[in-house]
Length: 108
Image 1 (cartoon, helix red, strand yellow):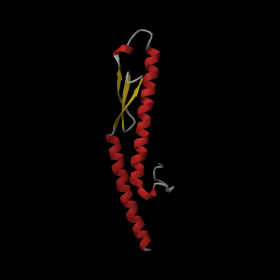
Image 2 (image 1 turned 180 degrees about the horizontal axis):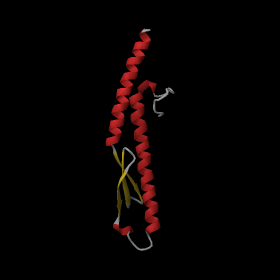
Image 3 (image 1 turned 30 degrees about the vertical axis):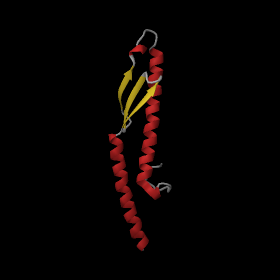
């Protein structure tokens, strides 16, 4: 039963690391860009879109559809970066248990 005690200790450490990683994610801010940087969006670690920057050169009549497409593309860029960072942090926190399919443990 010595192994059970060690496993419990390892699980507690992993739980602390996961909580720390989740706190770090909440503070994370990522920027996604599209159109060679003409449109930028800022995405918080929670997934909340907090800012949209649009270059003034795009603010011409008839450009609304293109601007909308660039905003969507910039958001997708930021979301990919967020998902990658999230997976990296959680995988680091889970350590050797990351590959196991443990109920209640986030999948990486």
